[in-house]
Length: 350
Image (cartoon, rainbow, N blue to C red; front, side, top):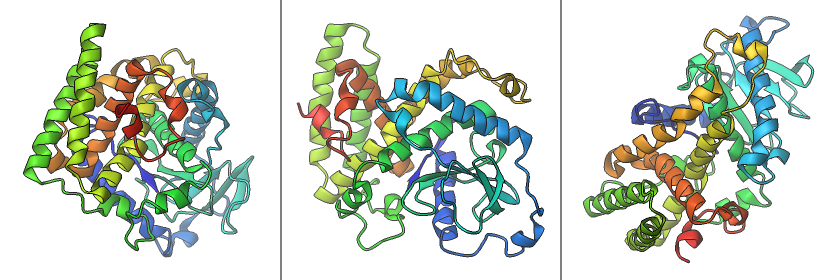
């Protein structure tokens, strides 16, 4: 399972905590009856996808086709099934063989009574081996409006690329971090020593060095600072037990780089020309406008990242920051990302 916690200020820690709660509900909902036992009776006989949602989802697929391959190698080949959760109905897009409780509602579109929470944002194999983006309408999620919502869906779509790698889930299981938990909740509940004072202080120092390196304009000084960062990073991870090291590495590799990709998508969409229908939405914001603040919001979040207080939520901005750093150190770094999965260590141990 993959979930995203949004930003401090706009991507705040409180939002991240609420997202974790939503994921608990997701896992439960995947194995129990619909959230509302009367849901099947309350859904219209022939549910119709709301026009606004049709425009939003259509714009996501249109944008993906134009920028995915630019942002990440071969990402444009990754299937992107999506389950949109509305108040009464769930609409499933681009899923070849939907479960029997889904009924055809349009071209490549199926519907069933709602089962998942309306504010959900997660990516996991909801109906089989293929990972599905499961997301509520923009107003019911932390995104609130259409353009942040679409860029957030791009984050989730990157999880689909991660999950689609050969034997991905078997390799994930082989990390040995689940300790018998087959629900996926170990990703949230793993007992990492976030509140250990010395570890929190070391993290804060590493965070500050990462920010200073990213903000260094002089190339020679940047290279020197990057070498200091490599050494300090190695010392930080050396403090951790084998399991803790694998857990943090996994989170930075998966969720941190997904946040990096989210920012890169916002920037790649700066000159994207949306459809007239999308531009006519009441909450429309141009992708150019949104692109100008996407990176600064994540870096501002990183400045405030507190391991002891934020716990797992720090991995989003911190991992994104490491992605930005790798862009400057080695523009081809993405080519090796899936060759050594679940850790960014090889890039910093060279």
